[in-house]
Amino acid sequence: MSVLDLSKLRRTPLVKDPFEYCIVSDFIDAGALDRIERDFPQIEQGGSFPLTNLQYGRGFQELVDALLDSQTRSAFGEYFGIDLANRPPTLTVRGRARTKDGQIHIDSKTKLITVLIYFNRRWGNAGGCLRLLRSPDDIEDVIVEVPPESGTLLAFRCRENAWHGHKPFDGIRRSIQLNWVVDESAAKRSERRHGWSSLLKRLRIAG
Image 1 (tube, rainbow, N blue to C red):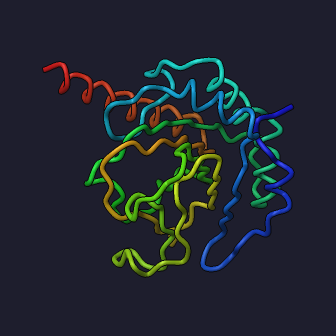
Image 2: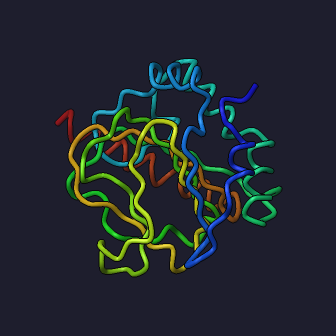
């Protein structure tokens, strides 16, 4: 049995205006959620980290395996109406947010779909809640706001108007991000970029 509730994704209506997105609460099996949170990578720095630069336990590996499973790819492809058969995935993980994070942006043109799953119990902060936005320069021009609470899924099609960001927050803010990208070269560039970034963060701390 998968730790992901793909049937709940399929039952959730796809919002199409101003771009395609969905929000699914309790997307992670309740029993698996405890194991994933227990074995989540210990990340002390801000930014995104590739799996190759992290250590984690079997519970978190269950999540990774489920996200990279062909059934997951098929489910999201059908849901968003994209053929993902030959589109490679990338996975990155965040453990902390910095006050400088959350600036309004759109994702890279090489990304087709962004999937975010959060792992933070009882989020009660005004900052750190991801906002889907109608414009690139106003954090208050909100379509919807998503508290990064445990088991919550936010997924969207990477369009030229898929603006998003969040108000400042400094502290633990755990999430995993799955993307399907246009080709293998884009996947390798993403791996190298996040790998170098995480190395530089460790060197700064060691120095």
